[in-house]
Length: 511
Image 1 (cartoon, rainbow, N blue to C red):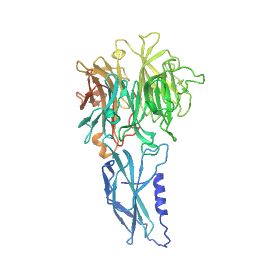
Image 2 (image 1 turned 90 degrees about the vertical axis):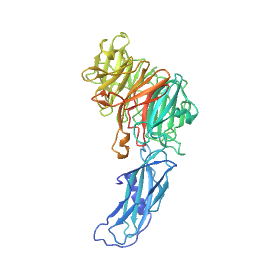
Image 3 (image 1 turned 120 degrees about the vertical axis):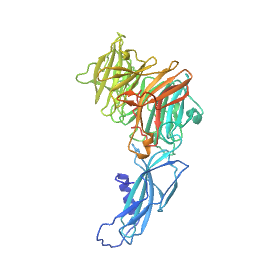
Image 4 (image 1 turned 180 degrees about the horizontal axis):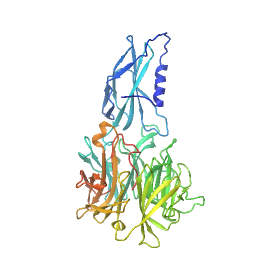
């Protein structure tokens, strides 16, 4: 329970005081003190199932106090629009069936002493959930169709049960193609509630299809065919990211965007031009993007050049060389084998290149953005090093300065500070590695502590069934055994944990 210090709350206080006119003349010896107890710091409720019942205890130093009461609710994460406060009660006791969509909400209680006109307002957090808003989501495919499994976690981070093929179960279809990438955004606009508003939306990308679903219900908001103002002729999604107040989608090598800081319909615009001459381009699936950094960075495979994008501009932005760079950002004659985010604050990334003229030349590069300039520092790989033959990659984000990668059925690490390589894990015979990923979920919410984690994920398949092993790490090294293993049908490509407090800032979207 806490005082409101936000602008909407100040408005609430003014509205409460404006609701009744007080023409009395009073004299006070000391400032009145109103005390409110009996409201917890946070509540978790299931939408359309649970009632929230609270009876606050209200007292005052004014012996003649006579109180009127008011309850309200407003949503958090309302970028691009002003929060709307809904009145849900005028009695001291709140007995309210929770109807809100699954996300974080602020519950407001106001007590006004009608004798003095003095009011106190307190707030608490209300996390509205459904069975779809807490658990591990695994994107997988069978070689031609993509679906999603849900591993439920009612009491802690380890799964207790599984809902297989939850996407097709809810939407009566699968996505075409092979599974690629998740992207979660709480500032995506949709009309799932009847009015256009921010929606907790999960993007599901395959190499031939895409869908965005409402995480509250897992119902599809838009399929690929109605996700754009003008549907592209080719279905080939590659990446989804957020930066510069926009959502940015790469399809068939071209960039499309939605500016989220103003009213929009949740539809992506037309193809961004490469330059004023409308030169041809084809963006790699790899990108550098962070909600904490204004400028995203992409790599044009045709010209071997980095490009960027503004929130609304129809033309891609030119990227320049920072002083001291080891490699040009433009026409560098390189093929991008991998690129990912190393840190959001400060913003930095790591990339692996192969020379187009001499394919035996491979370069590991650190990338540090400075506005629209990139500082690239190179480390030429030797063909005797394990990273030279790597097939899958997974950066540790923000923690240790280490890159995970796979060679055959072995998972290795490379220390990006000194180049040391170390074997971490060997996948059992018959399995092959499909992805490596680092994710972290942490905050300071007491009720969420059983669900916080910091894991390296190693996804494998034997051709028909998958396993995703979840490892703790210490100083960048994997624990001897995983905390738990998620298993299902198909080949896995990505995994993400959902919980009511998770926002688009929680995870880094990256390969």
